Amino acid sequence: MTCLSGSELQLWRRKQLVGQQGQAAALDWLLELEAGLPWSELQASYLHPETTLQLHCSLQRLEQIWQQHCQQQVPLQHLVGRCPWRDLELEVSPAVLIPRQETELLVELAISCFAASAPPKRWADLGTGSGCVALALARHWPDSCGWAVDCSAEALAVAQRNAAALRQRRGAALQWCEGEWWQPLQPLAGQLDLVVSNPPYIPSAVVDGLEPVVRDHEPRLALDGGSDGLDALRLIIESAPQMLAPGGWLLLEHHHDQSAAVAELLGAAGLQECRQQRDLEGQLRFAVARRSNP
Ligand SMILES: C[S@@+](CC[C@H](N)C(=O)[O-])C[C@H]1O[C@@H](n2cnc3c(N)ncnc32)[C@H](O)[C@@H]1O
Image (tube, rainbow, N blue to C red):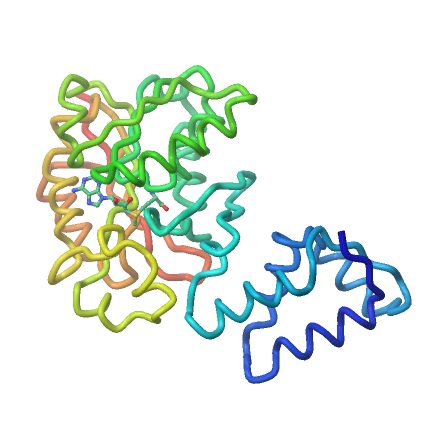
């Protein structure tokens, strides 16, 4: 435990931000997550600099993490090993994509699809990574059965640890399946009421030009969608009509410029009620469609 005054912390904070323009929010995120200093307390200390603040770790430890982030472009989430997402706090590592804020909307979209009907009995999350989407859905629909698929054993290990850490709360039965997209779900063909996926969708050449903090530290398997970014989306959409239950929903996240191509793939697969949804920045980021229900 470290105790210091608001003015001492402000001095320290200003020192860390020298030459780090635009990084203030990241530093405050670190103060909250690693040192346990809520953002609201940090803000209040500007008005009352004489207030004593308590940090859960030393300034030296924070400085060490911050320098590694700034100098080697290591994501802060990797350095602290955790990432808050929706109402969950998840373990993350270089084996999984750091859950993004826009993906929180994929969960909201899934929930909204069932607002006027019974919850899904069986659903799946393809490319589960940290398990963020699957764990959020499992908590929302505690009486349902969920299947979370990933081809990366390392990612599934992280997801299962996240599930174990949340086990004290009630949630749906979740099965973790190692394999390629639909392959582990073949016994469920025609029975899935909902399938969500945030697959790798960034075109390979764009991945090469991403910021080092992403390109050099997050798994390429989670980012690279092939030459046009649509490799995984094509595979997922092609088999969706066989795997979904009649009337079942398919919800996909995609790159900001893929909405027309994804709509075309959904239409070509015979899926219906296709619509696009924007993310918080106004980009067309999600596609929704469903299998017909004769
Ligand atoms: C963009 S990440 C999404 C992770 C998580 N669902 C999220 O939203 O943060 C895509 C995930 O798909 C997985 N993946 C890539 N290729 C796959 C394949 N052929 N079969 C199954 N999963 C795959 C990756 O390992 C990665 O975890």
